[in-house]
Image (cartoon, rainbow, N blue to C red; front, side):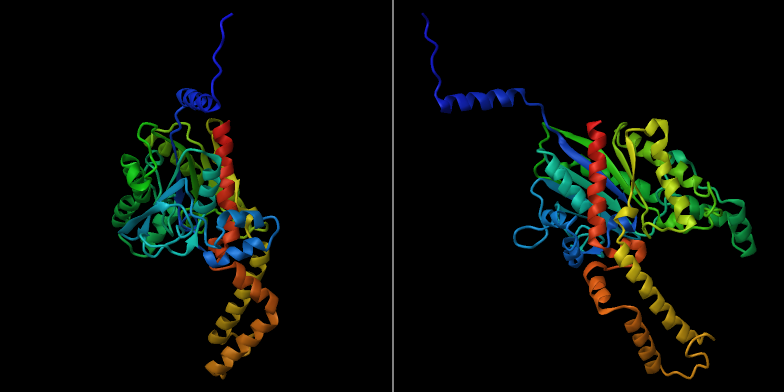
Length: 409
């Protein structure tokens, strides 16, 4: 009888590893693109992280966001290139993903803030063994109707009401049209150019990149909307059904064009639906949210575009306090304007008396406990989701989860 040699455990282990390596599929670098305006930049200060831990439901998320030393987590498997700036002063910050890649005064320096990118990257880093690269492009105060308008949407055309208003103001209409043409699509082009630039030399940003394995553009997340929401010139019927249809059309063109320009025809796409104001928005905001989400329901986008509502991540607790702060601000305004229904109607109050009056009003309206909660959780204005890290952390994770769902499907 022929004897079969018995392999040593060490040799067997080597053979198994070799066989596994020979049959393993190559794992390309996962590339995700994040783009939008100020809320994609992110205005949540790192100092508001503790507020995340106050809620048992989000305390585990805070543990992901912090290391054992109490400092923000630095990802070992995820890198970021962040292109931003003001005016013509654009620049890039890049490195391993951590906190500080939110809104920045200087594109090259840690801004002490986060946007959705932090927990988006943490989630993706945990989901994949292969390296992850986030390419983020975001600028504050930008519209989809003009600044991010993509090529297939065509040139922006002034409506009749706008043209009549220009004429009434004595403006040079032809000059206005020329200026609009110059502005149209500028930030779309900057976004595409930066993504292509990073992908042409990935190792510069992501040292772990293996050219033999290559890369795959695995998703795109969009968070924008405020400038379109409040533009009554572009959207004259904002509070009526269909008042923001032009946004839906531009968003659909944007998705098609991004996929075409990046040669990623089935790239998962997330639309972050504006959630400022939370669960009780006004009619105008309701119509805008519908318009933002509408492209995801188109037959061509079913299963590869998901609209993620961000209103559930708005802090209702902080929002209620913000409303009280707004009343304090209004009181100060009334005193300075000598409003007939307020204490300084006759203009006799000194500046010191006005300050004391406002201070007393604020103390009566906002309790010490509410003031403490505000200091702990908020760091910016309402249109920036109150600068609440909990909100941005939940948004980033939700965008990542939606992307992963589309990737599996």
